[in-house]
Image (cartoon, rainbow, N blue to C red):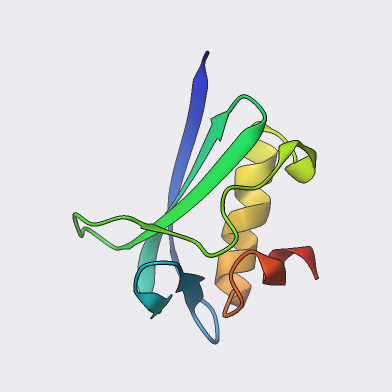
Length: 91
């Protein structure tokens, strides 16, 4: 199975981004979207850090979207802030 992986560096918007492991991350971050068949995993890290954290609400199901277009939607949402994790993406 092919895995698509996209990464972008952005500044997290107001409220930051909620993660499962460490709570809210703010500031300059790298967003990673990995598409494994029908599942989409969204992770985030502080810019140039080693540790990756799963964004709360990840993985997304098959109706989330596809490829680079989905990654761009997620990156724009991070720029606006996702203090509720990916639940904020759906609203």
